Picture 1: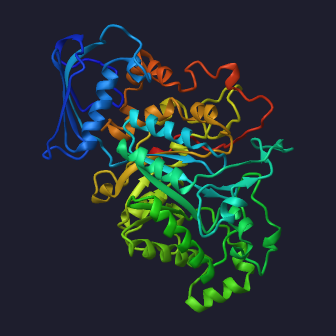
Picture 2: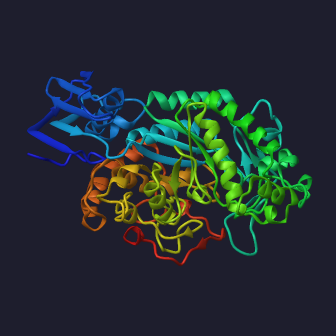
Length: 507
C-alpha cells in the first residue's frame, strides 16, 4: 500500500510494509548502472536501510530521502534525541524528471559572504536541486577575483551607497557595500557543492550589466560617446545604458577573465549573461558603427550576436558550453550554446525549436524576488505576485513543445533570486522559502498538468513535516499566515507590475 511519509520532492513509487519502528542507523549503499542517472531505490526495514543508486548522485539523493523519513530532528547539526527515531518501513523508487534543477543566487547586487553560499548549497541538497547558478558580476558589483585585472575587485567590488527598494523619492543606505570571493573561496564553494552532487555555474555578464567593470577599467566602455572615466559602480537599480564597447580589446580582456574563471569552475557550462544590453551608445558610437560595417552586419542586434558567438566558439574550443539569457537568440546563436529562458516562454520555445538546449526560468513564474502575496505587509513588494501555489503549478515544458521531439530540448528548470531587495541572509531566506520547496518538487517529480496538481496535498505535507525541517535547518521562511513583524520593511518602497501572474497557458 502507499502511505504519506511527507517526502519532498514526491517519490515516483512508494510502498509500505504497513509498519514502522526504530531505525538502527545501518545504511548499506551500492551503485547499479542499470538505473537511470540520479535515480535511487531506498528500502528501510528493521535491520536498517539499503540505498541503490544509478550513480553516486542517486545514492546521495536516496540519503536525503532517508533523512526526511527520520524526522525533522535529522536536519539539525547534532543529534538531540536519546532514543532512535521511529521510521516507516518502506521501499521508495525515484528518479528526477530534469537533469538541470537549478537555483540562481545573485551575489552581485548584494554580496553574500562565502559561508552563506555554502549554507545555500546545503539547502539545495536537502531539496534535491543540483545546480547553483552564481550571478557574479553586474553594474552594482564584481564579485570574483581575477588576478590579471586586480582593479575589478579593488574598485569594482565596492559601491559607495545603495538604493533601498524602488520608488520616488529614492531612499538610500549611505553605507558603502561590497565584497568579493577569492579564487580559493570559489574553489572551496565548487568543491563543497561537488561533494553534494551540485554543479556551480558561474555567470560573467556581458556585454551589458557591466558598469562595475567599466568603473574599474574605463577603456572597456564606449569612450567615444561617454566619459567612462567618470563612471562609478552603480548605486541604484534598473536597466543601464553603459555597456561594453564592441572592440577586439574588450574581447581580449574578457577572454583573460574567462581563462581564470575556467581554472576555478570545472563544469560544462559558463553563463555569459547577454541580457538587457541597451544599444543606444553603440548607435551613437563611430567605433561601433565602423565595426558593424567591417563585419557586414545588419544592425546592433547582430553586433551583440557577433560578440556572444565569439565566446560561444571560444568556450567550445576549451571543452565548455555557453549558456545565456534568451536575448542571445537575437541576431543568431552559435551551435551548441544553451538558453536560459526568462522572458515568458517565447525565447525558450524558439531556442528549442532551433535545436538549442533550454533551461526554463520565466520571470512570470519562478522569479523568487517577486512578491509572495498581495497583502500590504509584504516587505519591499516587487514584480508579480507569485504565491506558493503559483510556483507549485509552474510547468517547465510549455504546451507548444509538449509531446514533440523539441520537448527533450528542455533540459531543466531554474528558480532565480535577484538581490536588489535582499540585503542579507535573513531577507534571502524570506524570499526563497517556502517557494523553493514547491519548485523543487516541480523540478524533480513528474506531476500532472498545472490545473490538476494536488496543491492541497502539498500544503498538507508542508504543514505535517517540512516546515519543521526548515525550522531545524534555521531557515527564516515566510510563514503561511504572512510575514512576522520583524520580516516586514516599513518605509522601503516597492514596485509592482500589472500583468497577469499565471502564464503557462499562454506559451
